[in-house]
Image (cartoon, rainbow, N blue to C red; front, side, top):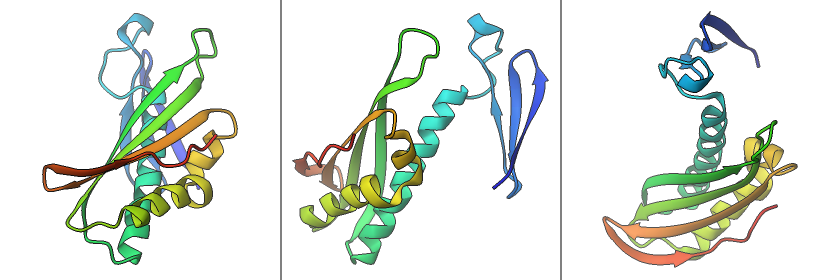
Length: 151
């Protein structure tokens, strides 16, 4: 896998993937940024969230679960001192579908965290990562269960 990061000016960059996609990244205004793109650490969390969401959806579809939506809400805590690495990351999945099996959802979240999500597994070597989920039918919550923690 190859990517290319091109400096625009100040602390603004364009990241380009070998698949032909591009994204603007920028620093905070107090660091010379113009707020024209995501911060690099935000992008890291988004990448991890997309990776684990991809797995959860694929596992649930393979298990023939009637999933219609999957949202990963991620809350991360960074160290106070430089380097301001992530020290805790919590992933809360909101899975929507009629008659979803709680055991299958829990299994999907656990398999992603422990076996399939390259980004989560890589980050978990230095960051405390936890996961939980809730299941909704339309807009009505039917279950909330904490998945096993992954550290």
